[in-house]
Length: 538
Image (cartoon, rainbow, N blue to C red; front, side, top):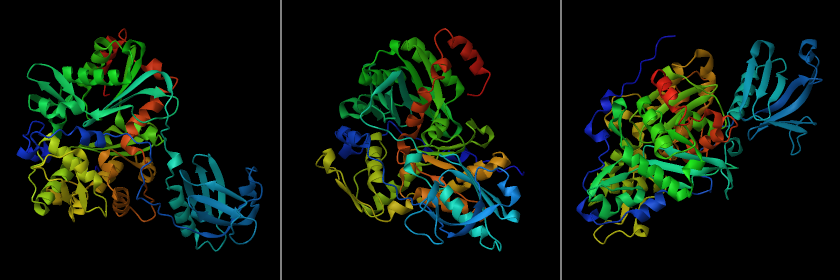
């Protein structure tokens, strides 16, 4: 296999691609308190997200042959076949007693998640796998000129997504065991006590803090209150110093304050709990050791484990093989095969929400005589709210519920910006970037994966992250990747209604496993683990 050309992050070393946490507010926002807006942005809802993505079904019906006795393993060899009338419908394969499809099938199987093995020379289609561990052998009668049509139809239904195939959070919550899950994201922190059934975060706030002039540290939404943000330095717990090359600095006192906020909101004693901390893929190994020291020596947790987001996201989708496309402030594309990350195929770029926000900012400035410069963290929250509110038909976004000051513009009119601001994902030159488009990067990652896994990976692409909530993104990505592969290869992009919290949901699956406690690092095993960590890739 020819080596695929790797995408370089070097071009992202530009001022406009670096977060400016201490940029000054526009004069109209100087005294505005954004906490009502933050409450809205960080609201946790158990209502499933209504998706725009529809399944691309190709339907077929007609006669197929099946073995006379499905339990007879030599039926195929003995050529004992009988004709039955079949139909594909809404992700299922149904069969009927009569020679036509009516409303009463005598049997059906769920095709979602199944593998379809085609043996055209023998006219056989073999269905296996899926949630119900299906095993069916179908024979397309001679002449088999409809063989490819049946294969295409079965593949389209096998690749379909159903909400019940994913982890679904349930409310009200009931604690399961003494385990605290903390997700440290680039923009947000989530936390909660492990529950009997999957649940959403019980604690959710911005991962930002202000180091005040009096040496105190204020974290979360309170950090952005005017009396705090104007009297200190705004920082992230783990702050990129060069996002293009994944260089970070750990603000230890800020991380401690963030963890303490989680502990306080959850009303727990860390000395009685284990903890699972989840971190972005890009965090370097040296910082992982420092974080473990804080958890075990600084907070006295009984034990601690650290996991990166990609494998946890696949747990939320209840699969072990697939391509995680995690789009937030960064783009991370991580192929995973049988639970193991394909390290040489990982693509990580500072590319995504920041570029969309910058493009939207320019468009809003053109169409609105706006007093905002959208540079400071507070004004970036306004921009984020506009981005999240704008769908295909929403043209005006109001800020009235957040008590804007009299001199602030309280409505934004959004025209074609809702389309053009995001187009740079698929046409990077719109953002003045000389890099591959999103679909090309996903395809590149798959091409760098083992050759015998590529077809499976193309059928199992899973979206996560805040930017993945953009309406129409999954459909567009699916169509663009399909254009890069042979027509006979099926491509499927999966979206869970809960993908915004996918890593947190996946962490609950890991923390509830019987092996979790054995995998935790304790104060006694910390030093040997740190030595081992220095010699390996986390």
